[in-house]
Length: 263
Image (cartoon, rainbow, N blue to C red; front, side, top):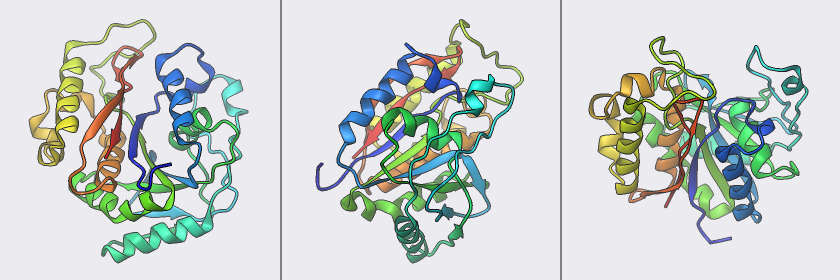
């Protein structure tokens, strides 16, 4: 592994993704894990853990959380038995607090599907320790970027930092149709193209102002929980980081499954 790891942002899609053979985003995640065989642990910032201020799970054996409803029974039988890392969790909390931010230690929180869906595809043997860090319910891009900046030293310690959310994620918008076989709308393509340009140029100022600057942001990130992990992954990559596009595909019509590597 290199001395300083990149950070990643991945789109995790629906919790059924591990079961769907041939889906491009699934196959991408399977291949992505093979690039990081020498890491010591994963720190995942998932869109599905939302707290008032940062919280890290310190549990040694995190249970698999099935935080969804209405899916096939098979999905609720899936477990991902990767170990946690109390030591890494305490290190994360210390870095966050050293940056002047509060950080709770959660002794019981397991892995939600924003963490275990990409992890079980990337690391199917479930031997790589994984720790989760929450996003915050203020959904402030600048503060999530600052949270990531506090985590940057972990990249020299063999820890792969992964933001797990959705590049285009219109769930909750009643005007947007989602479903297998549906076409991708022009507004979704326009937002995705703006995001690609802005990420690859390292334009943090524009990213922070995406609500006003990005086309159709109100649709593309209607409830912006799935966008916040991108800011934390970008911040953790360092002050001059830029993104590299490592995957692009669409799922259920308007779910953008883009992924980025930051250095």
